[in-house]
Length: 154
Image (cartoon, rainbow, N blue to C red; front, side, top):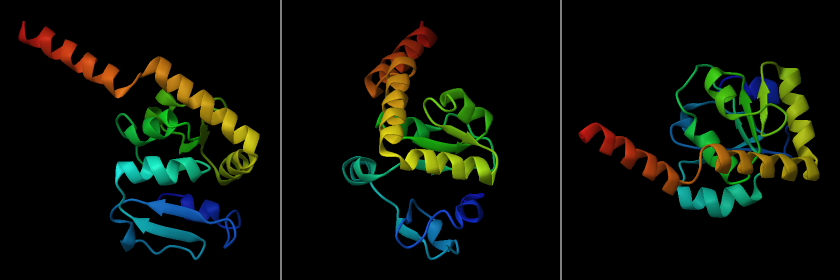
């Protein structure tokens, strides 16, 4: 979970909980202000969590390839707070389509800013628009793969 728990201390509490979804998290000792829900299905994410969530937080300690979970959250209009990693910088425009954080203070500032409903809605809309313009839909992605395969087999 990277710095999420230490940085979230004092920011979240029993009335303002952090919900964690995903496999293998049951092995992690979680503070009392965290509610763990286990692995989930994409349909449940789309229908239950994304509409109700205030944002997606990912504080990876390692660089990754294309951050698909972040892109899917952004495409759903869900604001993202992510660690300032190269892959995250490729898809998040800091302060416009999400937040890139490197310190507890930056994390607190991002969460506090996104707790304001109008800010949250605005950033979610901007994130969704960026993904649709720069990444596209799954149909667009599939078409790019088909084009790539056709190029290879010719």
